[in-house]
Each structure stands twice: as structure tokens, then as C-alpha cells.
Image (cartoon, rainbow, N blue to C red):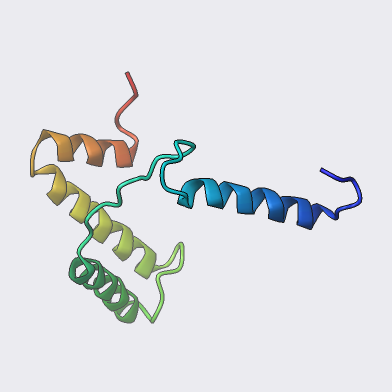
Length: 103
């Protein structure tokens, strides 16, 4: 690459080449990652619950305030409830809490 090109131009060319290699069918440079099937309705319900927690705690969930603690407790309860669903969910919840070591 020419040294006369500004850094941004060099990175722009490199970025375009990387994007093209991902978007062009038949290339094996990168493989597509399958996105998880996440319910928009469920995600909105969780956001609504977090907003309710904020509203009930002076309009915020700042660290060190009651809204933060209430939010953390709610998230923990959701993780604990998911852990009741089976061993896979329990291990995932433990991993989220840092209770599981890689083997």
C-alpha cells in the first residue's frame, strides 16, 4: 500500500476488502454465525420490567441506589428461575455468576 495514502484511506480499503470477503457468496474467509431466536415480545417485557423498577425507585437504577439493587435482584431471580429448567440452564446460570470453571 502506498505510504502517501492517509491512514484512514488505508483502513477504508482494508475494511472494504474484509466486508466484501464476508458478503461475497462462495468465499470461505468467514463463516456466518447463526443468530439466536429471541422473542421481541419477551425482550420488551424485560425492558418494561426494568423501567418499572426504575420508576419505583426514583426514576433510576444507578449503581449504589435502591433501583440498582432491585434490578440486580430481578435479574438474579430470572437466572435462578432459568436454572430450574434443567442441567444446561443451571450450568449457564452458574457460568453467568462465575461459579463454573472451564475444564
